[in-house]
Amino acid sequence: MSEYISLDPEYSVDPDIVSLITNLDLAPDGAESYPDRAAGEVGSPLAQFLFQIEGLLALEIEANHLTVRRDPDVEWHALIDEIAEALKEFFL
Image (cartoon, rainbow, N blue to C red; front, side, top):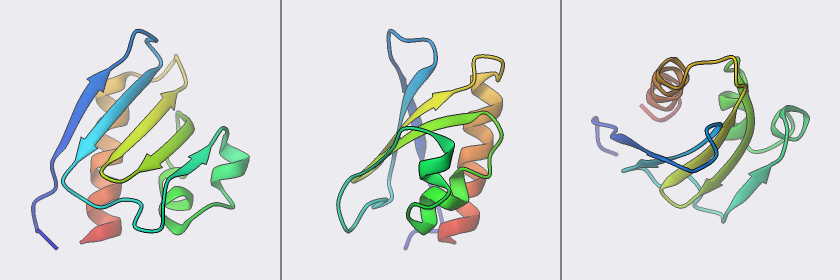
């Protein structure tokens, strides 16, 4: 596992959805989809860990990327920073 984690956002036409591309294999057992916090809180260990972040409303985990839906009251830069820190803590 690399000690360096990259996280590159790709913004969608929906201002509350972003895909985060990383150099990690996030879903070795296959894609995961969590349409809301309740589903994420009983999902995979990674999903449970990420759903501790305030403002994260929905999450899809596939191969090397996350698709995130945010609470519109949360700024993307703050949420992406928190996700990056959570991934570092989870994987390193």
